[in-house]
Length: 264
Picture: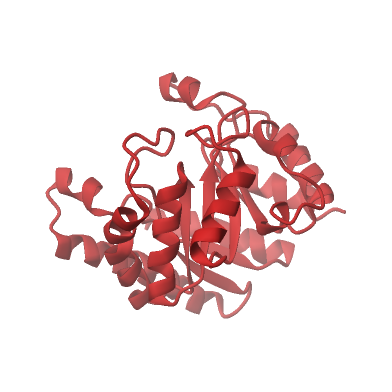
């Protein structure tokens, strides 16, 4: 019921604004390393992934095509979303994520989203697993306050490396888990690689990942400023049409973003 209430708010917003909507399954942490400490068996984990997509399919049916909804199977990193930790090879990452990819696609997800990717090899492995499943995939990179991945790689280099290793299989790229002021200057207007970035899910807070990790209270940031920064981004980079929120954001933030960006 809590999940339904959460999603229904975004469905209502998209309907009011006359936009399409991508609903992400609540499966960002539904992979083996995160399930084992909870005592979940592989079968239990598969069932949870399947249920998460089934819930979204039910909501889409209830919405009756208004707004048009895409169901995305959400996949998170094997490690922490802020810290790459031990970096897998592309082959190891493909093997680790392949079961969740297969279950989400079999459950009916229209596409996959690899969210908070902190390093290139894992993004490559996930893209390859998606390609084997036949499902489109979006790769969303986490960046630090300097606009670089937690591994220190430039965003343009990460996108180029994944495209080169996968024959440009990702449908598009996104940036998430950072404030717009952290990455706006990293994007190059007119650059081919920048045109591959189609979505942003920014943090509400200007704080670094280290600062956010140490906080005991949620930083909701400056909602008005955040919405204006999104608007500036979409004016400079009109291909960025997929807008949402990451750490510290909720429906209130996304509502302000939608209203700001659809006013021009």
